[in-house]
Amino acid sequence: MGTVQSQSIVDVVVTNDSNTDISTISVSSVDDFDWAGGRPYQFNGVFIGANKIVGRRLAINPFASHCPFNMTLHFRNGDIDTFRIHAVGCCGGFQHIQKSHNIYYERGHEKIMIKIENTKEQLQNERAEERNKEGQVAMRKKQYETAIKKFDEALKLAHKSSTITSIKDNKNEACNKHGESLLQKAWELEADKTQDKSQEAQNMFVAAKDMFQQAGIVKHTSEQQENLNLASMKVEGNELFNKAIEVEKAAFEVFETARKSNENDDYKAAENKYKEALNTYEAAKKKFDEGSKIESEKFGDCAQLTNDRIEDVKKVLNGIDKIELTCNISKVAIEERQKEEMKSQVGINRKIQEQVDVAVD
Image (cartoon, rainbow, N blue to C red; front, side):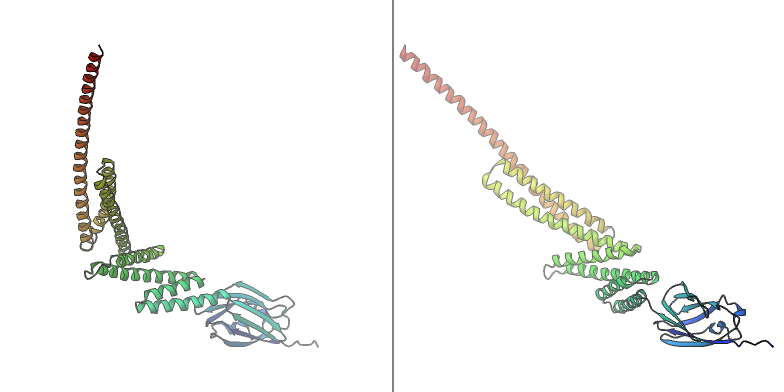
């Protein structure tokens, strides 16, 4: 009689050392001939929590040589790992087909150890998701600067495209919300009549513009784009208006020099400087007029103030024109008088010469 070979027993132990639950396991590519009852299908549908261990005892047909099968791990966060192992045989016995985690395989006497660990990138991505949640909490509390800082930290850590997209969307919202808040504060500062807060308001407008631009790197709705346009027009208009004031001050100094010298060239220099101020005021008014089409109430006062400055400068220029005309008239009169005096002197000299000539004769 022949000898009947008994089946071999192998314990397969799966250790989930990752931070995420394995919601289900699926087994495929099994050759039923290799197995004597306790097949790898025992792992189908098995749940393994984070940092938990699950094992199953498999029975191998005594005539089997390698007993390969595929195991796919489906994680709660959507990650998937698929690997192929050989329960027996002399070959290495492990192939990682679809990789999300680090998976370590060890085959010993009647035992197979499979250990799942997070990769460095996964751990970083988990920290990114934590920062993302912290940013969302800060945003709900209207702590927008803190939220943006959290989202920036998260973006440096994130690896998964879905995580990156979520963080960017949240940062976009935080930047826009912060920009809206800064823009409102800037309007309030500018409207404060108790003291001059124009520079503080301008700084706030610039900060709001920066926030809207940061959000624009991600995406903009039509409303958000309008806010960016408003902030940009206000910042640019204010910068031009402030520059015009400085140029006008410089023009006045040149004009004072001209008054003292009463030289036409000095008046011409003052005129050119005032024209520069006028052009700059007009450029500022153009920005404010553009803003008035969107926010007439908030930009209207700026446009009117700038228009008043334009009219004042025009009056000064008209005055300089009159002074220059007077100077030119005076200059012509002086030149004519000098010519007459020269003619008179020539006549006198001629008579004297004639008298000298007669005396000599």
